[in-house]
Length: 271
Image (cartoon, rainbow, N blue to C red; front, side, top):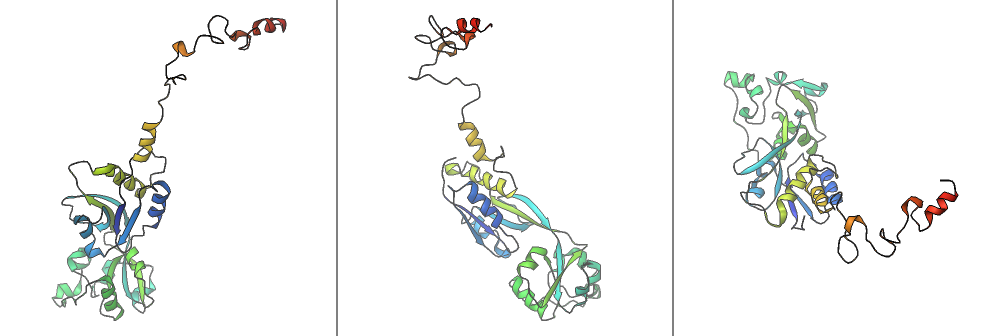
């Protein structure tokens, strides 16, 4: 591969790109990797604006005009004040949260929506304004309700006054990698750089034949069985040059060890 510009990647809270950054720096020092944190609400803004090459996103997302590949899933947790009854359990079923006030759009959690007492009774109050996860956690800490979050996000915003417990009965959260679709090859072999990063994130080894960098090395290496040219550039006839000291007249006697007169010495030794 040639040496194109830097690769720019954004990531959301809960995604820890450190291990991928280290792998990239070990393998692709010629292409600087620049990473920027972004909020989940704006996780695709930089990619769609052409300000970032790729983005770690929380799934699902609108795939219009994008390439999106899933990477991994993670458990969900319920977050509540530390003196809340959930603190006594290691995990809890979503059905046990039917009487709680969930600080989220009920349609985002159908399993909870369908068993919610306040929704059945028609007594659910409108959601208070929340512009970020931090603001939502402020409301949880104030005792106004609970949150259901991906485990990595709850750990990222960990607070001593709150407790997080695994909640079952709700879908796991997924993380993916997204980048813009392109109908034409990217300049400076950048499509190969994109593929290289995908391989790093997916855990391909540095010697994997699926990595473009490895393929490029293999293509550049001499082909097995190719005849090396002689000094001066002309290929040897029959695999050896004739002439003084060669395989022609007056050349080495290979049966006698590859030296003139070797046959006679071999006979004297009883061969």
